[in-house]
Length: 334
Image 1 (cartoon, one colour):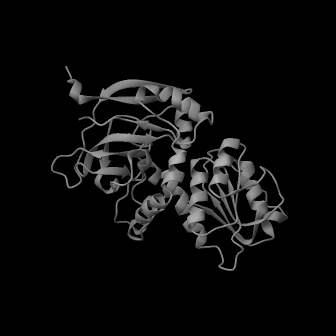
Image 2 (tube, rainbow, N blue to C red):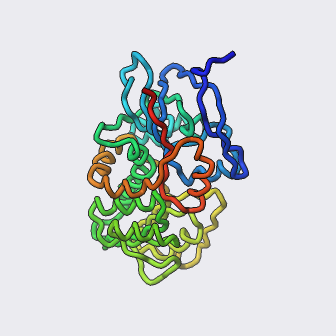
Image 3 (cartoon, rainbow, N blue to C red):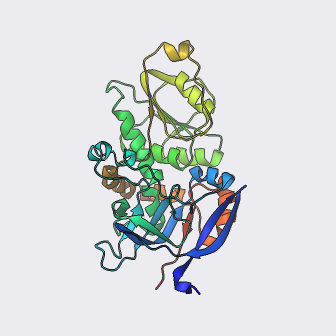
């Protein structure tokens, strides 16, 4: 009979919007891995597809925890978990693009067990040590909310002419969209507009220094549009509203086919259309500084914290748009 110390509790995404809390075997790290006690896992909208269709592995990819691997150099350290597995040797990794490894295509929380549970095994090179002045609730924000958002802005700047008017539209004011607003402000963008049908999220964007822009409006053109909703109508509108020589960044995800009509709006101007994914590990230190400079603003996004038993209810509320960035919180064993 298996000892209780070899068991842990975990969330099972069964599909049809059903999550059950079960007991399962505590994982054992393999070569080059450590055991991480999960302290926080932030909920993410990309997990909606697993909520709807079911998950083969334990879901949850915005993970923050403490290494429990006696004898390991990182034992006892609090770490955020870098989602993409990466070899560190291929052309992409050598160039610093660790999120786009050519040799390994596997994501924690998608293709292997993630963080909606008490313990998870993490490859050594996916451990991102977090300084002591960053509290547990904010630790997971260094991943999608800050990492993905800031990378999108930095990548767009490579293609935005210096003489551009620097006007920006952010479509979608979810956690990533609000993260984009904070990154834009930190990087010196003043003329930032946000569109979203959710009044509460728009109010937060305004508090962060952005201006409202009506959903579907065509009243203004922008040199930079960061599309965070994943909605095809928003993508199509961005093609129309981006200025000549401007940049349109696709951050939001949508698995449904998207058809672009090559009308004169699309054909008769030069503009860059970018897709950005996650962030390179080299961004992590600058992102820590971004968090330090805006701690109280980022703290506003973490609007709920709860235990594992409450996850089914809290995830449904999150999916309904009632919360922004809730976190699954585990108390540390003493």
